[in-house]
Structure formats: structure tokens, C-alpha cells
Length: 150
Image 1 (cartoon, rainbow, N blue to C red):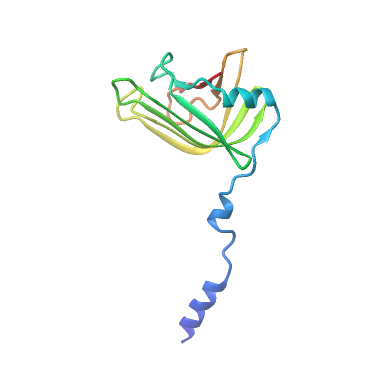
Image 2: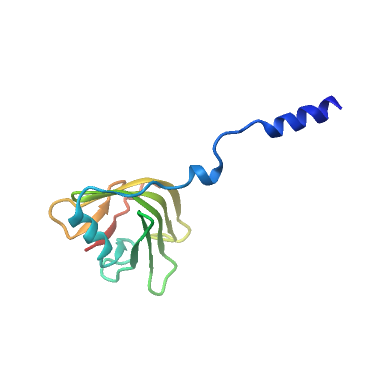
């Protein structure tokens, strides 16, 4: 009987916020309208191991004030893949912050698997026509250039 009472009491003790409450993203902070427009009108993305010239798609959409980014690039005739999926938490002058997953598979070498969910930083440097991921060696010793063109 005592074990039953303890079990029942433990079920009534709050364990903190629910998973759904913790994962509800805040509205995207738009600090620069020009940069926000660049993102919505982007011209695709590329990972240098797959192809600089044949870009994948990058779709930016808004849902109740939260900007979401989903992108993919596939190697023509090969197994190499790039995938991004998450939310954009802030857009500033020449940069944005992305909270989500980036996965790279089978490129530049078959069997390479890089998959991480975290806060990522993209920025425009040296007057280039793309945002570049600023975390270059996040998976292994290789440098990955992920670019979103505008």
C-alpha cells in the first residue's frame, strides 16, 4: 500500500515544462529588412563537395512570426547529400542565426556522416553574394562551405 501511495504521489509532482512548451520557438527577430528580403528571395544553396554550380533548394517560410528554413542539395549521379531544417531566430545586417539540423552524407567520401542539431551562424563576408555557414569544421577535420545564395 505504501509503495502504491508513493507511486501515485510521484505522478502528481510536476516535472517541469512539457516538451512541447520547451520546443515552441520564439518569433524571429528581424533587425534588418534588406537581409530578411535576401533570405526569402534566395537563389538556392550549395555545399562545395557536391557542386558549386548546380545549387540545391532553400525554402524560407513564415509561420506565426517564426521564420523557417529547409534546404537540400543532392549530388547528380552520386550519393552526396546536404540537408538543413530548422528555424531562423534572428536576421541582422548581413547575417542570420539558424537553430536546427544540418546533415551531410556521403560527401566528399562515401560513408561520411555528419549530422548535428544546434545554433548555427551564417554571414555575408567580403561583399559576396551569399550567406556562408561560419562553423567550418563542425563534424570532422574537413572544412565544409555551406552557402545560401541571393
